[in-house]
Amino acid sequence: MKKAISVIAILLVIVACKNNGKTSVDSTTQSENIIKYPSDVIPFMDEWKILLGDGSRSEELIGYEKEDFFYVSTENETDWVVYKTPNSGITSKTSSNTRTELGQKLHWIPEDGGKLTGTLKVQHVSTSGDATISSSYSVVIGQIHSDEGHENEPLKIFYKKFPGHTKGSVFWNYEINTEGDNSGRWDFSTAVWGHDFSVVGTDANTYPEEPKNGIELGEEFSYEVNVYKGIMYLTFTSESHETIRFTKNLLKSDFATKAQIPQQIIDVYASRRTVGVEREIAYAGEINYFKQGAYNQANGKTTKSETYDGDIAKQYANGSYAEVWFKEATVGEGTIPKN
Image (tube, rainbow, N blue to C red; front, side, top):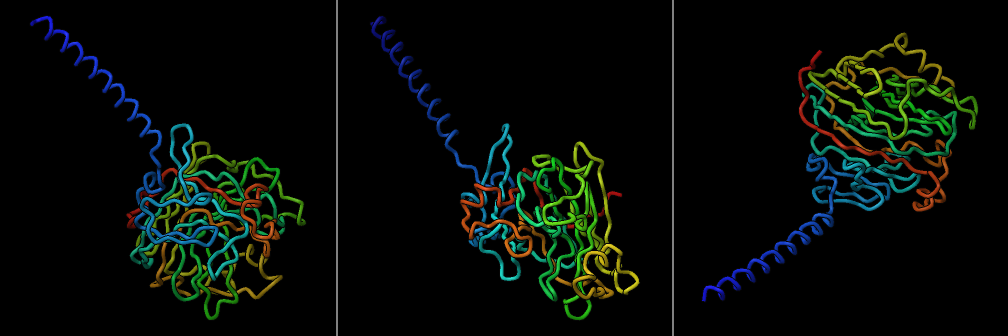
């Protein structure tokens, strides 16, 4: 009897081992097959809606992805949210530029403020364009956008790299909240690493000198946009570069008179149109919101970039697109600046 019990016990152990082994294999297989969505990597997606480079939109981004535009890529065990958009596609009614870009659902005025952060790397910008046009070969990776009045942009953060260069530039533009009508609007550009917006080629195919302190494609960097009590505090960080900080008042204009218009603006704009001034209170009391992702500045009209008649697959195959990867990002209330 004891022998029979022992045999049964041995059989039960064998069956259990087999079952445990099967369970272990199934768990591994299931783990390998789990789909990761952008909202799994950056959990603030419930705060945003999105417009993609093919013109599609979504108001709900939890568990959402769009092949070839908005998805997760894993590199060296790090998950990144990919924003990709062609030079030509379907975009918003107020722009010629395509985008795969988040738009913040919550809107705010500068007096109340808000904060946006991002850690990212730009993987690609258009390889075609006109070197004399400031927006060629560039992508906007973060914005503050007005939602009333002229609907101008108190902040656009750019990455730009000319073909053949190893390093590109990071800079930010401030667009004036134009007094009167908006015909005299302009952007004042400030370099972070590399050149600012005004540095262009001498002709369509001749590029300026490569920036010595620029950022390469695939090189990680971070930005923080902190609007607190109407003041915008910008911080840019990179492991291989000096941390750079800026402060800009959004409640009182620096450009309310003709005498205050910077020489950069006269050089860039005055030859082609009237240069206006900003209202004295700048963006005070005006509704704004954040944007983040890949807002491609290359298009067939302004920058004369190649678009392959809008064929997205051909554009992707031939370098006519922008691609930006974010591994971390946050959005929330503005905070007291640290320094």
